[in-house]
Image (tube, rainbow, N blue to C red):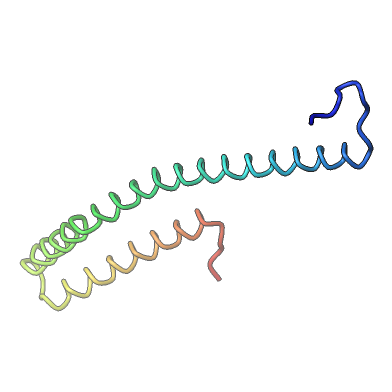
Length: 110
């Protein structure tokens, strides 16, 4: 038996209806947000995976370029000095890249 639409509801019944509607709204919004976050993470996750996959060949290329520079320098100077110069240059480049990364993350080096 359904209530007569002309009969006013009690305040308690109206509050129950409002809370039920609010709970349904919150659940719907949470579900919608979770699905959007999952889609965003899936899209960005694939990009990160591709970047990590490209990192291997890049590292191999950097090693070969460093070796080429070392052999080029060792042809005009003692190989120990060439290795020292290449090591210092590599550390300076790594330090500069690390510093730029810290600045992008918002942290300041101490």
